[in-house]
Image (cartoon, rainbow, N blue to C red; front, side):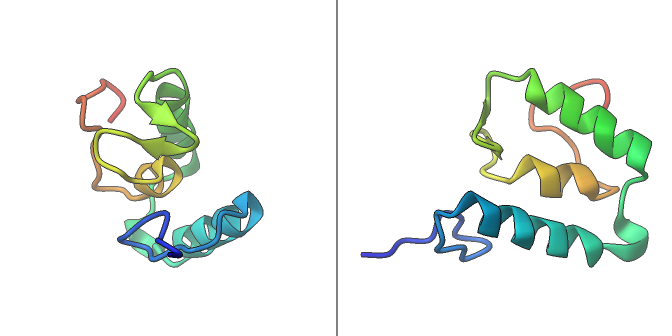
Length: 83
């Protein structure tokens, strides 16, 4: 059975390049709901050091951190300072 990697996104491909392409497209669609580059990079920096991050996915909430970090009104499930 070809189960989606992410049930919310219905991503079926296990090709990391395809996943990155889809994430980049969705970030581009955020428009005014997108965090500025400084906040985005700061959030990703925090996530990159977190033990709950596995292959780009937060195991606490199941999101792709690149998408969550790009949205202006999001927060970390662990309430990290930068979020």
